[in-house]
Amino acid sequence: MKIEIMELKSMLEQEKK
Image (cartoon, rainbow, N blue to C red; front, side, top):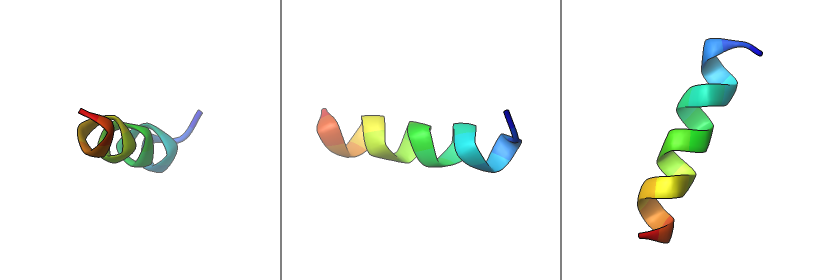
């Protein structure tokens, strides 16, 4: 996985909270 994907995933998780 690329860092970009992990970064996007992190942003999505933050929005979910």
